[in-house]
Image (cartoon, rainbow, N blue to C red):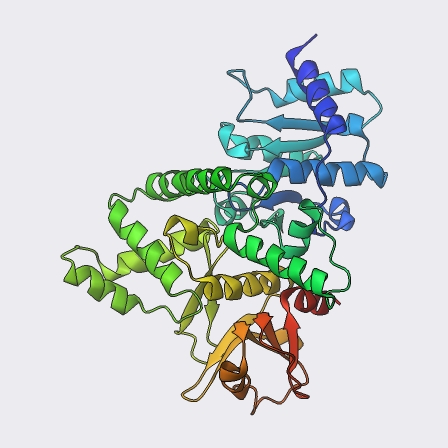
Length: 411
């Protein structure tokens, strides 16, 4: 049997037998009707292949495609020296003369001249799914290569509801003592190790930490140092640590620059700006601007477990970071507002939604937390907490734990 026939049948069998866990990510089936290349974007280790399997199985279950149509190729495991797309198509039609091929190319950057091959398929009206590695190809570069013929599907690590699903935990009446205990312990575990599927499904804390270290090592050396030709490892590590320490706070580049100067570390201020851009490009950090003073910025992480690498016990910062990520997954326009008298942690402009985040809510900090809302004209004022000292009654501010908050913004 021809090698391409064996390859097609092999991956169809793998997809058929796979049992990918459900993700809380919407894939619009109407995308298939558009004349677009579908590209999947994600940080490292978000289980992109299994998510693609999940989408493919959903498409099959919904009768949008048939298993026999799928041509799946993972180019990191492609064993042959050459790739002949015309021969691949010919072999497919020998197997399935009455079906249209549906191409799914994983790690496309490993294929030489992939842009010409993908454009050949596109120009011949074939459906194409693509994924790639950030260490060699960025989504912005892919859009440029294909001249905006792509639709990007963003895949993030597990949100909290997905975390519960992967852990087989069901939260029902969170007001019972047992359910409150279960919820708080689950959120604490989520804060500690967060949401990469492989880490979530690992039983041992030691294994989880070893995985975290390995992820960080690959990201640091492959996605940053090698990709961007960064020679000074100390500078990038120090910058990452400062970003972690200042999560939830405005990031002061000038202060970081002066700290390097005091250490006799030679680095241009523009280099620091460049490094921040690189970190954004590889889905390491996300920038949030002040609503009015656009030069004021905060940076949040796509992966809060980097705090474990730096041995930081900043649970309140991790918690606020997680609240931001739940918002970022659902809304486009998120800003903060800071004045001389108060600060609003997050504002979702499209919903006129104002949010404060407090890790431990008590009598001492309650007034400070809600004071920022006093001059806000909106019915959507929410304070999100991890734990609270007691039940507080405030008519003009809604108090929610993380689970309640997520349910509110989902409805």
